[in-house]
Image 1 (cartoon, rainbow over the protein chains, first blue to last red):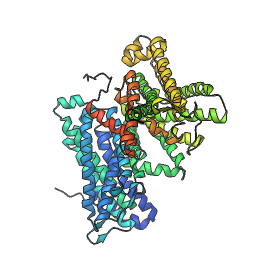
Image 2 (cartoon, chains in turn purple, orange):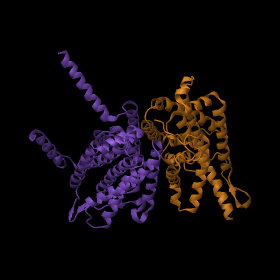
Image 3 (spheres, rainbow over the protein chains, first blue to last red):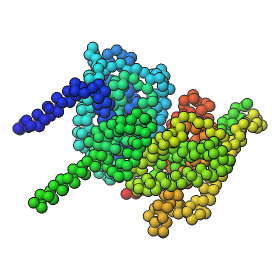
Image 4 (cartoon, rainbow over the protein chains, first blue to last red):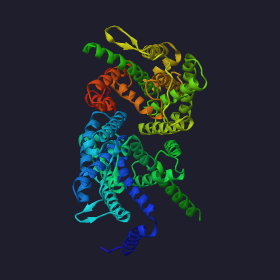
Length: 322
Length: 294
């Protein structure tokens, strides 16, 4: 087997550039990049459920919140709690609740399921703000920085490395999952539940699995969010957050890993274009979303792929003419 | 006051909210049946109607019957405009598109309403006197409650006659049964879809004006109104009598839960009911069981 030096060099260069980001740009930029990384994790999770399995969820803010509160609680109760275990706990707990939600998914389908997830989101928001002994109520609670024994990730640079590293791992796993049998089973269920069943794909197994994995990703995203913000409050996990997650995958492109990344970036960059006035931001995000749904239903990544194939097609034609 | 009297009192209070839920649930079901879209912007349509009513009443000082008529017409027109601009283009597309389109419309409406009027709380003057009248057994009721219940039932009756006696109503029913067959029989599906949106927005505005004095009129009211979707599911989505029954039942259940459980449960009780209904009997109270065809 010959080793591809070119590819390796490009890869190494990309990593070095990436590691250099905190030294080249300001603190704020690094912070925004960290938030984008967290959103990428969440929108990969959303995409596994909505884009690949075809179930629209309006309740992912619940999973995000469960992840964030899990991390917040273990990190503030136990000094120097290893962050990797904290994140795993965050993901597993919300994954478990997602698994049970998956059983509701078996009873119904389509819009009913969306309404059920909406209900879960609203109920969990109320639980976060009312279970005061555990969550601190609507005043929220502070989160200690991630630790590993005596090592602490305090500064924004360290947090950025940590978050982007975990994002990369999550991305790698998701790409492989989608290319595997499981990912293909998800897509088959999206296209037609009945024909998927007739090919021997168990709805019980794969729909609940899709919910669980999606919730796991969102939970880990929530855990990272708690570490980054150093503070959690129920207001971060209301229905508007859930709508944002869905918007990220719709704007980016359903059923596409590139779409998850694009959506996360757009969703955080777009509001900055309209200044600091929140209602203008929300208003224009609504307009952009509507435009995308009406004019570019496959999202930005779909538009990008279409553009590429159009350019290739034109180039080939020109070659033939010459 | 005895226990029985107290329960009756709570049922009367629940009926008031229940009638509003029933009206809004009718809007959900109508749009679902006519165009196969679940309109998540319905809460915002109700809030929009209430704000229009507020302007007509407080700014222009019109009498209340004129406020109802004008906001009915204005909201209906706005609903039709939304259908022509947006939702005509997503009919027949996957559910995901129409759902997201309605969520996007909701975001736009929420912020537009806040920008045009205010994001703060407003006090809507009640459409009927809200002083409490004493009844035997220690019960109390205000003319406002009687007015809300009477107007709601009046609208439901008119709506029932409209669906069964007029040509437009019959074409809406035909479209909801089979869109292709209705098209072949010469029913204009886009006209039906426009009418569904217009009626939903119009009925929504009446519901908004009626309930606003009992709640606080602000943009965030949509989340309370959205509970009507629970009523629609409870009655079996797609059944109009079910929507009425589900709405009133939900209002009463929610109010009783508020008395006998801790206060925070009341806010989410209807959503818990929804989860239970979906898991235990997804076809609802009056809905038909759906058989999937390949």
